[in-house]
Length: 375
Image 1 (tube, one colour):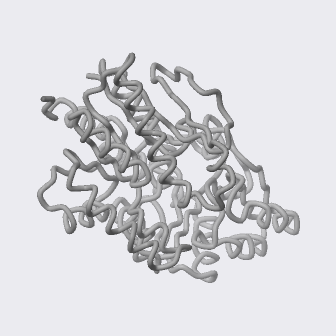
Image 2 (cartoon, one colour):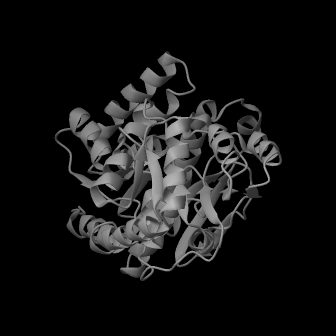
Image 3 (cartoon, rainbow, N blue to C red):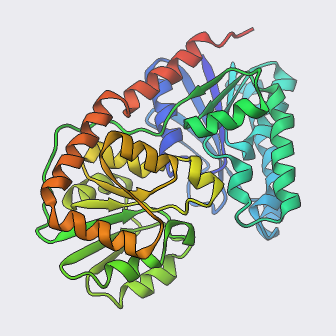
């Protein structure tokens, strides 16, 4: 089967899409991905592990418009035209697989024009995500747009049960499947290599993830270190500067993907605190919890979230209140009871081997493509 994916980032920074695309290629499908390389960081076209990647770069008008949401209509039109061109020249695709709401309009246009099947792969609840920063009319427009476009979708894929419930509420009649952002299992428990008790955080630095409070807590605990890796966005510069005030905090900057697991294996535990009052945080399951499972490291997450529920159920970390004292108590508890760290880590590995692994998610994805009817 020929599959066209549409994605609003450069692909190689999106582990979910990479894993889905390469899994489909390994199963014998042909996959081309049209991506939006907004900062023009990569070449216009390349082949990555059998996946053809075609990158759209911002033109003059897109460069001067002030916000990506305003640029989106231009991106939709450009992606549609590129997909149409591919279909008419060298890649007659059977399915358009759209990743997130900011690609779905392009997919709907292609379906209407060409009669292909349309899959909507929602990594986020887009309206929940943008309501953090955008005015209410813009948020309402996004919710209404999704309800309108989803009527043209042949299959919905999303990442967790809370997301699935959202789509059941707005689109009861459409097939829906969950493909979680799980990781490949990597073997049995390995003890940390750092002698001093070390926590690790690798991810985006935002107020929603308890920054800078994490530094303020860890910085005052003796004989504990914190390693931070992050993309250059959000509070990056602020946290980088603040880290210099604490001798026990190592700010590493951006971490290459292939270094994440080795760095995690060095450390004793992972921090991943999300504000539970945020609607998206409440129902989501961060990639980091699945990473914690496969590496066998206990993870500190927030109570009253889906992540907290999963970690509590599998007994592979600590779910705490979203406040400083709770974080301090959790860190000290793990530091003083490293046999518990090992027990929680081994529980995580067992959970990954039995349930939360990419092989199981891949089989769900492949089944979707085996059963979708091509007319």
